[in-house]
Length: 196
Image (tube, rainbow, N blue to C red):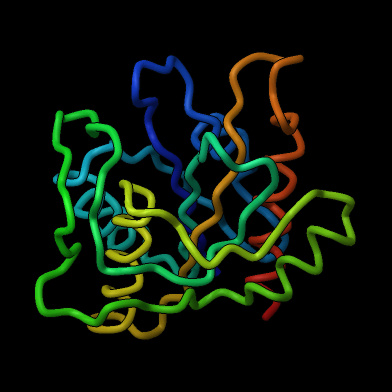
């Protein structure tokens, strides 16, 4: 089985993004999964197409997108992607959409196609703080999540996809969650997804 795991480039003046810092540390093999990683631009205009290019290039069976959230204090397994873009801050291209759809004339929302409840249970059993989240926000993270789930629903029903929000990570001693724990959490989510 093949897995694609993505993280984001830094944004809003930061020099690091915890999602990609963790994703790039994943091994190339996790259990039965061959793992490919990629960095996505923090851009409404470019992130979705970059994700779909990587998804098709890798012919991934499982796609797990990872993003950081400044207000997140545990691993957030996202359950629902919504068809709304509404930016509190500009993306890296300066775009700041308000109340616009991710995909015109598409469904209001999609559920993740990963075993959200089982991932949460496995993370908890491993001693990692985690919650099931019902909002991936309305910034580029949700844009990518919705793009992935719309693709899975309309063009490639075999893909299992989802989204994981992780706490911000800047420097050791200042992080809410150690980077090694974030990496371990992503690996667990992948293992559970592959086994489900």
